[in-house]
Length: 188
Image 1: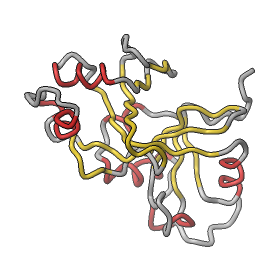
Image 2 (image 1 turned 90 degrees about the vertical axis):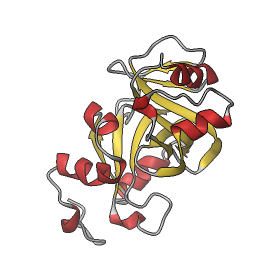
Image 3 (image 1 turned 45 degrees about the vertical axis):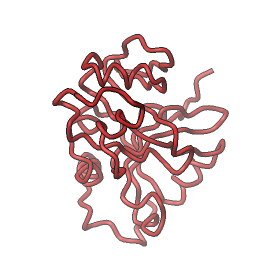
């Protein structure tokens, strides 16, 4: 049964309360939110690896297509940092793919990296190492505590906005300027 208040296919926007945490100024895409808990990927924290370096690490050809040449690998969260999670459009046919809404999918199999190296993968990709996870009910408590704002999925925010601008752009979709946020924002 689908969770009525599920945050699946939404973004979380970190509030100033998280300034001293791993999640400072992060934007997280929520992949799953159900009775088992919540799993999401941070989409604006750059790893020091680029996509070509990651492909090289898997000993895949480094003649990487131009579209991925400068693309950073992102840190999807503090859990399982050695595992890759790739958000992409369109969904396609990979070994381990979870179809999501709006033609979006998450793939965790190496065949996708191989396709990237060969130039046959979708152009719209976000490659993350690690993920963010919450126990059942934990994320709702954090939202109640004013740690996160939520907005619906927005393809442009995921794929087109530069990493360092995603947090500000996400806030602006709510009509909030980053400067107006204070640590003791009222619970409205």
